[in-house]
Amino acid sequence: MKFRPLHDRVVIRRIEGEEKTKGGIIIPDTVKEKPQEGEVVAVGPGARDESGKLTPVELKPGERVLFGKWSGSEVKIDGEELLIMKETDVMGVIEGAVAAKPVKKAA
Image 1 (cartoon, rainbow, N blue to C red):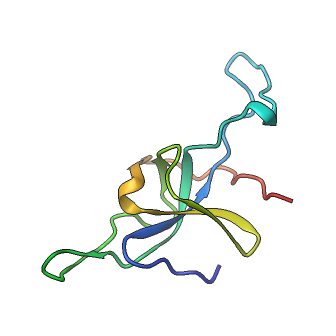
Image 2 (cartoon, rainbow, N blue to C red):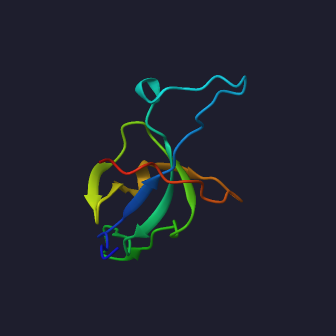
C-alpha cells in the first residue's frame, strides 16, 4: 500500500468477528454488525500542539485496536476497504493479540 496518513490519523483494517456464537449458532451476514476491532496498517507523524511541538502517534503498525462503532471514514485503497480515523477515535490497544483474518473484500 502506498498511502501515508497525515497528522495524527491512522489507517485501520477491520478484523472480521466470529461467524458463530459460543453456542455454535451460525450468524448470517445480513445480521452481522461491522467489527469494532482492527489492525493498524499505517500511522501519521503526529499532531502539533499549541506551541508547534510535534506530539508523535502512540500507535504502531500491526497493533490490534478497538474503536467506536461510527469512528473513522471508510475508504478503498488498492481494492481494500480500510478506515482512516484520528488517533483519539481509537479506544485502546489489545495487548498480546495477533491480528486475525481481515474483513472480506467487497466485490
